[in-house]
Amino acid sequence: MRLTILGGGGFRVPLVYRALLADRGKGRVTHVTLHDLDQRRLDAIVKVLREQASGYEDAPLVDVTTDLDAAVTGADFVFSAIRVGGLAGRATDERVALELGVLGQETVGAGGIAYGLRTIPVAVDIARRIARLAPEAWVINFTNPAGMVTEAMAAHLGDRVIGICDSPVGLGRRAARALGVDPERAWFDYAGLNHLGWLRAIRVDGVDVLPRLLADEAALTSFEEGKLFGADWLRTLGSLPNEYLHYYYFNREAVAGARAASQTRGAFLLEQQARFYSRMEAAGTLPFETWDATRLEREVTYMAENREAVDAGERNSCDLDSGGYENVALALMRAIALDERTTLILNVRGRGVLRPLDDQAVIETNCHVDANGARPVSGLPLADHSVGLVTAVKSVERDVISAATSGSRAAALRAFALHPLVDSVAVARRLLDGYLTHAAGLDYLQVDTRV
Ligand code: G6P
Ligand code: MN
Image (cartoon, rainbow, N blue to C red; front, side):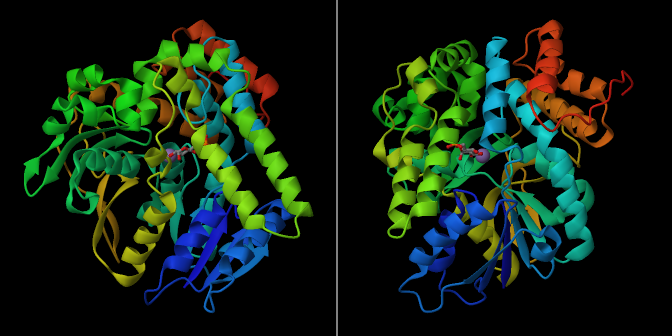
């Protein structure tokens, strides 16, 4: 089986390769093609993979290319994990918004809109090429903002594109562990949009054990989400929100925390990754160790400003083990390739299971997966407060997709202005002007007030 990774010089590729090496089953991936625009990044990552593969006689073969059409032709699966504009682009997305006093974050709020505007034209071009050159391939989208990017790609690939994220599975696992429950035995009723969802029930042997967790102060505050949101708020809400909802429920604190920090997350990672890739270029020995130490530093500092803003303390060592997006990806690939039925939380077109969203809206929820792809499963209805956020943000996502595919500046302005975390149309205008001035890749937006 052939897997192509777009963004193949990216820092998280060794995680995917590690999962592939651990897969001993039949029908495993035998051939990996890494595609990236940057040869230097490819060379660096290949050094890490080579070290990972030593000792495995049957490690998947790896080749690299900077030619996109060649990379996708003949692929059975394509992972898309690109970062358009690089980490410098992410840092600009964050900074422009924070300077205007609103949230500047990779995927949420104004920063996520800017990132979507820059990424969707590229993602749509990729989707079109795959539809033409590898129409049978399944596309697994990691590229953020994953919900809107998956929806934009689905216009060309239909249900053959599936978006993934590690945060829902991570939340489920942490909550189960806090209860002493084996996550493999639990059914997690999770639904919403990417980075905007809620875990509403944890069923074990037909019984919902979430109320037991909510009642247990010590268990509830023993893991990431409990510490971030506080036991009292979680009890009041009656569900466990995705950690990204911290940017909504504690917006003022999160913005203040990010503004007080010496640099944005993107700026921090830009420096960290620049150090990593130049060390890799020089490295003769132990590229894996260098990579692993860098990865750990990245995980320890993840959402540090949010934790600091609400005095949540340090990250627990057990929270460092993320949901493992590479394992979700592998499980998805196996289920499709081998017709091994399973259930995974994925980003797919909703087919009406999440009311009041329409059939075409990409949502994040449990899906049954087999050789026919992923079909969303309906769970509990969304609470009214969730309906409010989910419909508002979906409408913003659609304005971003519309702006990115038509060039309409009005649609882009509407996206900024109608986002729940942007509190004034005047600020939205300044955000759009700020991004047009400072962010690369948005020149296609026309000065046009028509939709
Ligand atoms: C989680 C999210 C990803 C996001 C990442 C950011 O894994 O699910 O969608 O890209 O965090 O982590 P970073 O280390 O880049 O800030
Ligand atoms: Mn994610």
